[in-house]
Image (cartoon, rainbow, N blue to C red; front, side):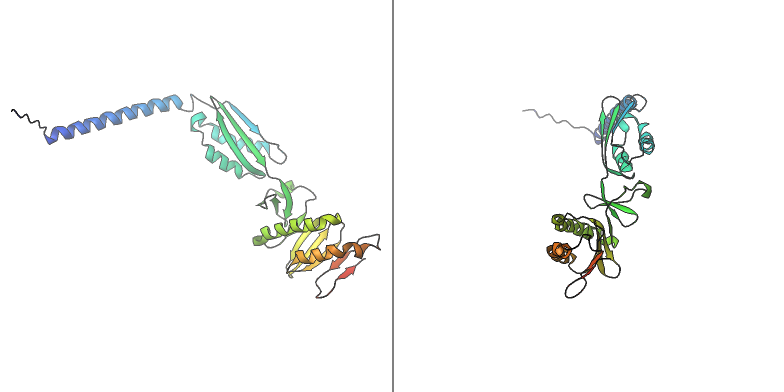
Length: 240
C-alpha cells in the first residue's frame, strides 16, 4: 500500500488568502464604482414633484423651498426620512408621507393640523389634544379657548369635552374654559353666561347645574349673567 501525503507551506496558504482577499475587495470596489456611476444624481434627477395638500394654512413657497433643498441628491440618494422630519417642523403640518415613483417622480402627501381649540393665547389644540404653535396671525377665528397650566392641557382638554356632553341637552356650548390662578374654574357659555365652579369636581357641579338649569331660567326671557356654584350650599344667580 502506498501512502501519498500532500503538504503546503504556511507561506503559500497565507499568500493564497491574501490574494483572494485582494481579488474580492477589488471586485467589490469595481462593483461599487459602477453602481455609483449608474445611480449618481446627474443620471437620475428628480424631474417631477407632486404635492397633495389642502393649503388651508400652509405657505406654499416655504413648502417648496424645503423640498427643493433635497432634490439635488437625485432619485436614489434622496433622504426621504430627513425631508419628512423637516416638513413636520413647518407650522400646520400634522403628517407627511413621501413616495418615489420610477424613474423621476416624487409624490408628497401632507395632512394639515385641524385646530379645534385655542390653548391660552399662543397655541392651539388638535382633535387629539396635541398642542401646536403656528404663527398667531394664522389662528382660526372664533375657536373656543381653554386656559390653564401647561402641564394640565390634557386634563383640561378632556374636561372640556365632558362638559360639552353635559351641556348638549341644553343646546349650549362653551366659549371659554379657564382654570383660574385663584383656584376656581370659570366657564363662558355660548349664551354669554359665566359660570364659576370650585376647583374640585367641576364636572359634578356642572351636572348638578344642568339638572336644574331650565327651572332657573324658565321665568326669564334672557339668560343669567352669571351663576356661581362656589358656595357650600346652593348657588348665586345674577341676571344683570
